[in-house]
Length: 172
Image (tube, rainbow, N blue to C red; front, side, top):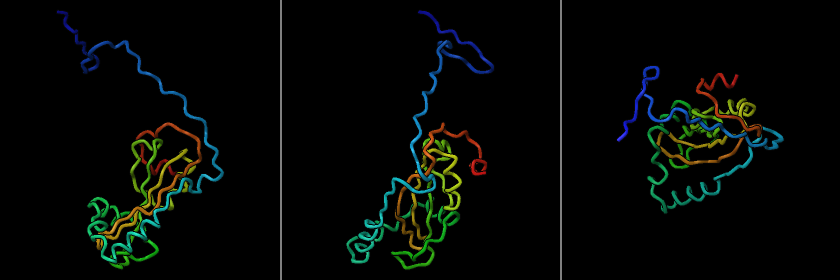
């Protein structure tokens, strides 16, 4: 039985055939025509579903726990990163209702899933071809949370995923 020879390469143990080449990434897709990168597109508005769920909640057809069990991380994000919403909480009528903008996209690389302020989104539109924004409302008092809308932003020019550097540097 033949033994596999292990070689030390700069402090690491190399196993197997080192002559295998890593496949190169393919070409990027062609740009998507976008008239205004800062204008939301592919919008999905959950307003009608929200109104139906609020009605169901107030008429007793739904348990409070169906809508008022926010994840602890969501509550912490709402506390430190939330932006004041225009109305009051639909469940408890409190005035502390906030909105969070979660961003996702392949081009964001390790920064996908982060929260960005609404004022930061226009600057990101020229830095990324496409990314998705999910707007969630959260009440820190009663833990109400609801996905309000989702939409795409970006200039339509595909790019490779960003390297792990501070996102603030990308916005400048």
